[in-house]
Image 1 (cartoon, rainbow, N blue to C red):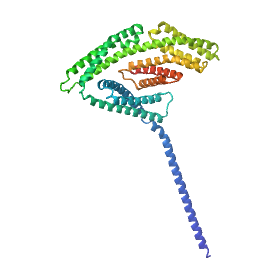
Image 2 (cartoon, rainbow, N blue to C red):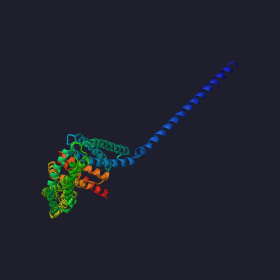
Image 3 (cartoon, rainbow, N blue to C red):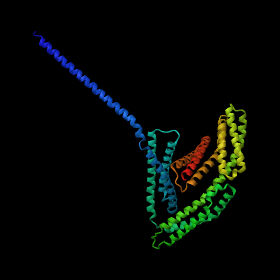
Image 4 (cartoon, one colour):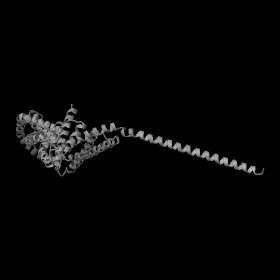
Length: 433
């Protein structure tokens, strides 16, 4: 039949088209599935890899941050001494830039310690956040160190010019004379501190007067040597002697200031303790009245416990509190804080403000005394980053307490400062073993 070849050809063509279409469709499906599988592999690989990428090297970064914190904090202390020497030798105008750079470096270090405190808080941060903060600590430390190094270089150059040696010698003799005149007065102050109060309060200063006397003798000797080296031509190679005299004088003044500062803190604590004992009598009267009208048994029990704690502390204070007013003020202040908590629901806002104002003075004295004790112990010692962090946080909280307008907020900050300073002291003594 004539039409059959034509039909056969059409059928063959249609089969070829259909077969091609099926093949193309299968190919497309295979490609799509392959791409989808590859995408899933990448997705899961990224998810699985996120954790190690954040944690990778974190321990090493943390160690580096702690080392740099300790190192730059020590550099700040050395820079403080250096600035004191520079001001005494060159005057405040010539050292203004150094003072500005030192303040900027200290601000960076304070920010770094604040980040370290946040990293040490009880609530853990994500690995990524810990890594970011640790890197920020390192960057802040490096920036502070660079600023201090630049100023140190500038003053090394400045000290190479000894043209003002005669004026420096005259200034040294005047200041050595003023410090020598303080020796007997400070000696009497130490005797009073030793005889009136607990011996542990004055033990750290037992040799301060004798050491200051020796340091002043050394300063005088170095000044004499410098004066002997002054050339009539005005070219004076006496920098080493002048530096030695400045260093000895600085040590002597620091020793004398230490005794005066300790006596002032103890006297201030004694006055604050007397004031706290008086205000506590009114607190106890209020607590006894509230005890009878407590809204529930638990509140009544808390008030009773707080009253018992305060009465025990008052017995101790009356027996020997004046022997160690710093310790007594801290203990009685803690007992009063517990009573404040127990009476919080019974007091109105005005009463809370009045009680906070009354307690704030003692809390501030306690915080300053605790911090001073840590600083005295830390002087000349290598402390851990944790101890320095708690110390920095105590200083920050004390600043908050001294500047806060709300007495309740100020009191809370002062009490936190006491806690951080106490922790810093414990860590400092542990790390120095």
